[in-house]
Image (cartoon, rainbow over all chains, first blue to last red; front, side, top):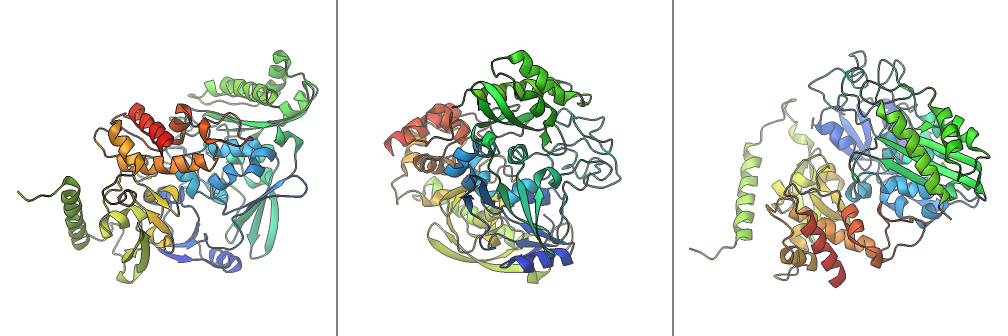
Length: 331
Length: 208
């Protein structure tokens, strides 16, 4: 790692101000992604601000409206094992439990999870290859390179990378809110607006700027969250990033879908919401696989697989069907 | 020949090498590190406090091995992928290669050297010996530290990705082979001793 200095932040306003002032400053919480990026020389901050001791940001608590409030410094493990999360939004608990290993989940913070960088191998290969996300304007090595793990939706010629977070997919399905502190005050950003598509500026994963600190997440009450599931399909059964993943939640009237919430991971530069399929699923009987497939297909008309990931579109359609059927079996 | 066991011999050699490494360490290729960037940190490891001077970029793993001389914790991938460097911080298992020593003051760190009671092995250590849960042994300290924590987590009711219904309470008797395999997936064994490791954990879990 490049040499850097580290200091401990004790107060949120001072931390945000220091980050706004100096582009050499980065925040460190769990460090599980940042440490790897620094070891691989993908990022070389001059100074780290340890935000782990900022007060009041590590709680997970139920809200009186039936939702959840999750602090940015809560560890992935704490949120995954929380009984309120497991009962009010099992897809969130499952998405966390399907991520990384217990060791890493014990370290990684929820805010840091949202901020983790893509696992595109070219992004992390500093010595070898061009990458517009790492070095803007240098080109995209994956566009016609090894792109089996890459996007099938929303990519641009500048970048075909996917976002690696699992829990962000569940949070997107439930339209959660990211609370962001900045020197100008606190704002609530819908997670659908938090992440960006790559366009011509793939170096920016999300809308945060200098001085912005994620302080928490708000999970609103959703009937569909109670009966929900996170399905992750990957090359090995455990401790691996998703090829495709599905967060699915249903509100049912008997066996008929009253409303559905669906988002996918591993298919785009951000968690990918299946809005057209959600709308088409209303009124469909869970025991009618032909109509389920037809509804799911509505969200795949704009799929654009790359040379090596043509399989992903079909895999994703089947994963969505299986996730819906699994949710349907849950009481 | 003096009566020196393997552990003492290796520990002695390890400390010697560590001192040599400190003396001959060259500045990083990126340029000399200003001497004033060393930070004094107090690390509490296995209930003993060590005061050491480290660069801010020094990982907990490197501080444990090279400065405190506790070389039982192994450096495998150094990227948080293999689990060989697993230790406990405040009772929770973590990978020590992915955190910084300067961030650990005030925390209680336990390494593989700290889990036996004198000459009496921890039940998980004994189970690994009894079930031949290793070949080359490089991953073993990480496997054992992970397994000790795994059993505590299951007793505390933590579910895992192998748990059928996360919304229901998890009870310790649900901890079967599939659960152990899932919960240990962050520890790789390139000798592929997995069946024996899982057996060892299952037995330690029943008897511990």
